[in-house]
Length: 83
Image (cartoon, rainbow, N blue to C red; front, side):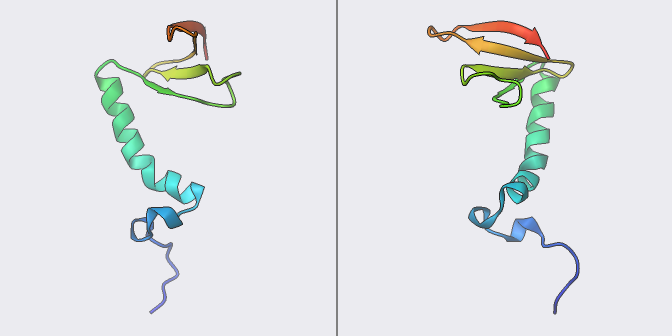
């Protein structure tokens, strides 16, 4: 039987997913992880090419703000600005 509904992404092997499908599959896990970090007063760190001028920069996302950070050669983080 064929169905006109969307394919359940949980039934497709992860290596066969497109970038968009993989992102959609991981979204609930990512959101849960993010909320867990925020509830503990912590933050998540990621690289965002649209705001990070180099690979030495990263975004720290808190529940109420995002900050652009830079890491020097001694692995010390430095605040650049609030995004």
